[in-house]
Length: 319
Image (cartoon, rainbow, N blue to C red; front, side):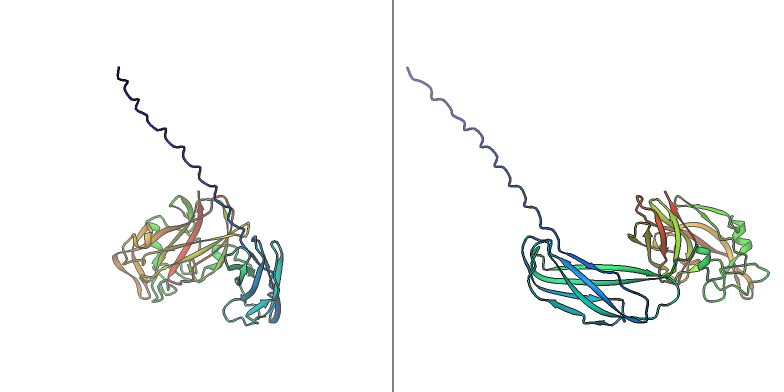
């Protein structure tokens, strides 16, 4: 009797185990020692390089630079010898520190190491930021522009550089009176308490202003002059870290209301000119815009953008 041949189906081959990825070598560490900013003087600055990689480091060169215009001697140093894993090497530089200028300033220093061996990357860079001076206590201390005038006395106004300003009466018609609460983009802001005809907003020029709070975003209340009222603000946190964000405002009158991503808050009718109230029927506007924050950190102070076309009436942290 014929016997049927069995159909043999091969068992699926076991999947080959994927090899474990090799751990990446630790990165070379570059550290800049504190810089003595008590100028005018020549300060010595020490830069330390730590070989955090698995191989010996050799052919090490270290460059150092300070703010623009600060002379450094030499700008690059070669460090002789080789350095085992975990070892450190140091290079010293002399930097000419000018006489401190008034107000608050952040000075940034940069050092770069180039090498062979070590972690194999071949280059590593570090920066160090140091502050001099003290941030302003609040935004009111930074007021430098008369943007609102009374219709009975318009001559002090110069919001736009052409002698024009918002009408206090027309702002009051839309709820913007001195000290009024303004809610926008989740923040509770305050319309400046400054009297009409006095400085009551900030033409942004890099002012550092103290601000406390913890939240997801920083909201600015303001308006633009011209069509290029955009810039970047820097937020300093209590732990010493920083964050940045860009924002902008439309022109107070003629740009689209959503230009630069801003949100319209209020529109007032007409404006004050040097000759008195005029331009009735044309809207002159206030906007809100925001930048993101690290909600896990406490804000310490804010450095405003360096663009005088941005006018800020208030700023506040929003949840």
